[in-house]
Length: 450
Image (cartoon, rainbow, N blue to C red):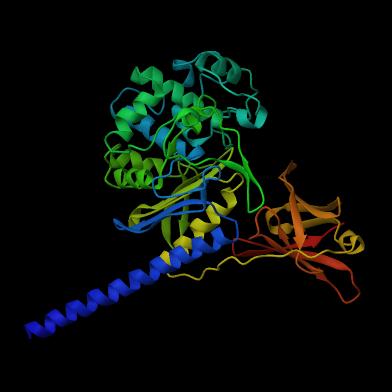
């Protein structure tokens, strides 16, 4: 009986090992497919319940010396920094050095609505402080005095707590407040309370002047062109986006959050709770996937893209870091598909798309205005330089334009985000009735209204 019991255990272990090996192959196969198509260049880590299933570098770290990305390569993580800034604020709240209800005017006077904007508003992007990166991208380096004076001049987007709008300005102000409350620089505070306790030895702030194992960020990176991007000085994104890190250190960050080593469970769980105005908590985008709560944050800065996603309930962590500019869409798509593999859900592996050339007369019949009635969104189709251009609008606000490349006479895909497809609906008389839009597995129909 004992021998049978041992054989049964051995068989069960073997089955679990084979299943894990299969999962690892699928994870690596997916990311490799993106890399081979030139849609990913960077490093990835995937873990589940304390087991690291995948940690691997893909593609070029530095084209000048032909070095390749590896698991110790440092990347700028851009707005993933906000999860650290939020945790630092919560740590000071836990230490009773400040309150979430504190007003901005307690620390800095002269801001419009300064007597109404709370720390919680700043954390949740409900302060109304105008996002300075939408206003001015010419700032090369700055300091607290100049930045605060500049932010005070920006017209608020709305009264505090009445709306939601992503604001780097709010998180920059949180960094300055952290300095006032802690009595040390933002950099020193994060090192003392987060990096050092979690042994995040490869994380820091001044990427421009850091030497060692770091990736070069690229504006263009393909077989023919390797064009390095300008490095953003850390004083500009500051506490909204200046941290650099590795996938291994981000895993340490995940593990520290899971065990509540930085902030206690009650405050951290509050950080994961979305505001009533948007699915954003304190430094975390909140969502659900496969019936599980997911907290995540993406980032984009010159030459780099990042995505850091966690499912606390199942102790899942995914870190995707890229040193290719404009890669945020792809790192998010990769994250979604890695999660599908972990949860044994259907997923697709990207394939190479080759656009065809269409006669301008074919493109002209697609111009006009289309409406997705159920979400009150319109899409304007136009032609520019023999290319079909799509621009969405909602409530009077125009979204970014997309260049749609043809696969055939009626099917197109987004040049920037190849996962987005559109298929024009044409009746038997050749008249365009509408267009089906496929994005992230969701299909919507837009009727042509003019």
